[in-house]
Amino acid sequence: MLSKAGLVAILAYDGLCTFEFGIAVELFGLPRPEFDFPWYQHRIVSVDPSPIKASEGVQIVSGFGLESLSEAQTIIIPGWRNCDERPPQELLDALCDAHQRGARLLSICSGVFVIAAAGLLSGKRATTHWRYTDELVNRYPDISVDPNVLYVDSGQIITSAGSAAGIDACLYLINQDYGTHIANTVARRLVMAPQRSGGQIQFIPSPVAQKPRNEIAPVLDWVLQNLHCNLSVGQMAQQALMSERTFLRRFREALGMTPKAWLLQARMNLARELLENNSLTNEQIMGSCGFGSMESFRAAFRKSAGISLSSYRKTFGGLSKENQPG
Image 1 (cartoon, one colour):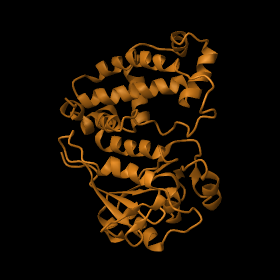
Image 2 (spheres, rainbow, N blue to C red; image 1 turned 90 degrees about the horizontal axis):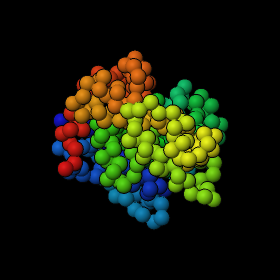
Image 3 (cartoon, rainbow, N blue to C red; image 1 turned 180 degrees about the horizontal axis):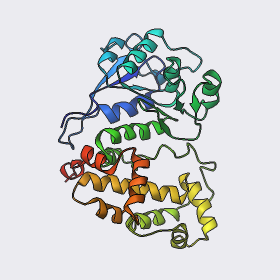
Image 4 (cartoon, rainbow, N blue to C red; image 1 turned 60 degrees about the vertical axis):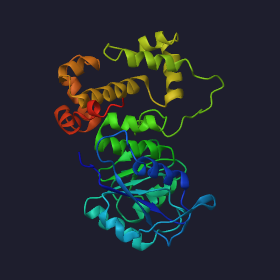
């Protein structure tokens, strides 16, 4: 199978945030011997003269300049060094040219200011780190800024919130290219949970509770083992030995979303993996995911994945079975 995303260009510039830059290199540049198909090609592209003077005294040397963006199918923009500094016009022109020919752009954190300065987000929805959302709104009122989500997919452009949300956005892009199983395999190598839904909130109002919410974790495990059942919030609360009201509050504190939203997300993740395996019928998958009718299953899947069951199976069918780690 040919690489579906071709060349991924990762921008580097003076004042670069090394964590966000490292996310992109780890996910798109690291060799993947666990897969028997071509992974992404990647290239570090210098915006400023090399060596790049990144944060904390780190220097990065690259042999590629902005002219090489003409070959990229995906361009990753880590956090921009200063939201008040307009990016070089040469960079903005290169991004506009790349976007015009169909390349994808993905920003992490304040990298959205680079795309916005290029005029590519006008009339579109976007996000950034919650610290910068007001500034983004004030500077670019024609952008619909969502301050609460982890990332936003606006078609050719994906924008993500604070640094760690960049991992979720990059995993989302891998999911779009290779399917859920492959994205989850990459997440496991990072020793992290599968990619979170972009609609989850950026931060929890009380991130450090006085009493750990360990009581939620066993409920999640129980739900994942029983996705074929017609589960309710009341049943989940009983499993946690809580009242439904207390469970709802503690669940949101722990995961930043409602039990109902998380349950639907879990069902859709299972549906994707089973479709990729290609050994079950749609009716069998429907039952395994706890849906009572094919109509509701098809509608929920299309809303979640953006494509039909048959299109998803055609695109990703076989990946899960052929590339399952031994």
